[in-house]
Length: 194
View (cartoon, helix red, strand yellow):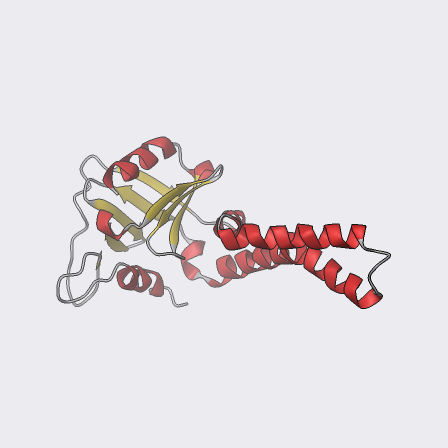
């Protein structure tokens, strides 16, 4: 992904169009101003591998399909233990694979995916600033910024380590609690507006 793709993704994600979409991105063709940042709550974060890993784990294992996968793995493990004398070698191998699939293999894949995403994405190499305003959130990195209105936010999720602001079913802004000192104020303001 090129350096400027992050802001383009924000623009597309929020559905900005010439007919009056809601997200706005600063571009060379048009000078759009950020939302009014008076009385905004500001934080600056740098997404690290562990933050991406925590997001991916939360996203993958908090859904029905994530829990269903764990149940399948546990059931396979029980079948291996209980039926080790009843099943042949091929069946035992398949059951062991199923037992490891969602409890060992998938977590290792998630860790690898987190490392790749953070290493490949230029946007994760620089701090991202979030200003939570009355009208929405201004996200900026360097000289570029994007406005995300409250109507563009689908869901707010808080985990032990992260504040996740979802703008689609799979895209979220990741705010690691270890890097912000006003997390409860951020969560309170967002919950009051979405």
